[in-house]
Length: 482
Image 1 (cartoon, helix red, strand yellow):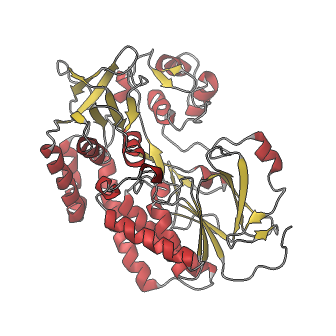
Image 2: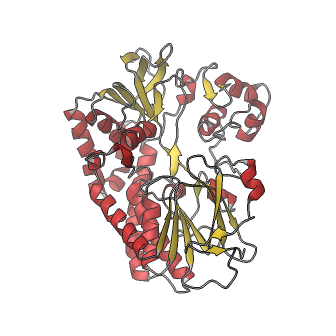
């Protein structure tokens, strides 16, 4: 039975994603009078940054896996208080695949419930805040599909969430600040980290000395990681890259080489390092699927927002990595601003100018820092030269580097979409999330967000039943007004 009577009470905000940005937005919005439904795919809040071991593992000191445990405790306790007060509803294990606008007003968040992701759930709200985070960017090289090669974030997730080491002897490689906590975390947990292979040129950081110096806490954090690496005896190879992974049935070793000033492999510098695990990553990319489905403007690969974290679609805010990758502190700042803005706008009042200005200054400084890191940690300019014609680029459809190149040189493809149609690269299960950057790099095309109708695979039965039943309205009731 559905309740079609007029809704009573405060405006309803749906926050999608319970990482740093989503948590900060939820708390700010709830404290300023909104009824918030926090929707997340994980069984517990925290996102990747605050990922915790499964409760069944009985971890005695989960704080040992985090260097900002006090910040997590404040967010967790604040969320618990808001849930107890009835201002926040936390929907766990809800995998959002689409958000639609109502015929008259409001939004419907479509999700799949539980690990099987077969039971549909619909959540109604007056506005939506997207805190969907990001995913890792991985560039291919010969041997990268061998068992034992994992993403840097995947290795971290195994350690934090399952208390499992991906292997006994590891090499951590690629580029970006994520490599530091991954290498130190693996070493502290008992793995032998044979090398940290970072492709960034140390001189690149000098171009951004002002932006970096303006965040002394961040520099201190980097120094802390460096000290931990030294303590664990981790060898650091700067301005180097992995050119090949070796093994028969699984990973046995990697070959690394130094890079020249142009980003090419320097002849005569190759060396082989034995290992059973390679944790590799080349930065992060924003998750923009839900924003694109709503028609939000995308700048390059990130959701466009204004000074209040509003998108160009009325009633939709976005914060955190979805609007540009910048780390947990920036995500917290953006989430706080977005939550306050949503509360003010939905309540019909102007945001507090003084509080907004103070938070905006913090956000601006962190954005400058993030931009500096993004430039300094750019992947090697000529990484594609190491991708041989028989290297698999699209794992889902088993499309090789040679097939991608032939689509351009022999078949005349001039953009990523045409390459996809000619080769099937990006048509598999991940819909190009893993191989999109590689295909763009091999074809020389700019990397842009790819519009997809759904943010994740959806059973046909769910699509057939969509809208047939009432939806959760974020207050524990049922609403079919839209």
